[in-house]
Length: 220
Image 1 (cartoon, rainbow, N blue to C red):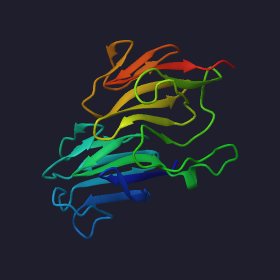
Image 2: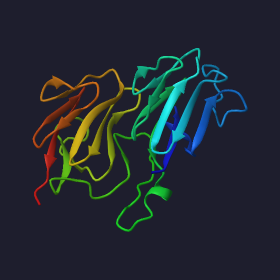
Image 3: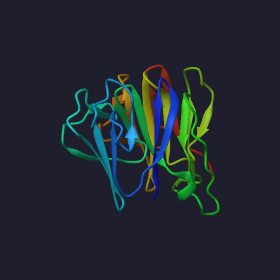
């Protein structure tokens, strides 16, 4: 599976980088594979490794730290990355996404281009089901109230950068809701979600700040 990084600053995409096997260095100095020119980024800030089917990141003792899904990484500790994970390095937000050009050469898969800031930002894939049924989010409050969003992607993120974002990730015959970033609490049926993610079922109520929604499995 091929991955790429979507790098944004001030809610604008500044670069896309396809991850290659081996090491990808991130930092302010010229020799880095991904150079982020900002004084809050250390010269040698972080390192991403791609080894077979595993991707991980290590903070290289940076001054201001590296954040993974809102949590500050321990220095010199390698943490595995998953599709949909969000990194913060200084003022930059880095999303781990699939490299569509490589990953969807098969018939039946439809790529979705990466968008800038939006309330519904999806990583592309089609026809992902639970018990043979397409899942959807029924939005019940907020600016998108009344909208039904089919979950036809591997990872669907909901929210606003810098305020709060949650992710719904398709796993084997199920969906899991997890926190991506922000201080807004996320609940499922009025209970706080597990830090590792909470499995949702048909009819479960999901809330984050002023956004309330219901997870649905659509009729066959």
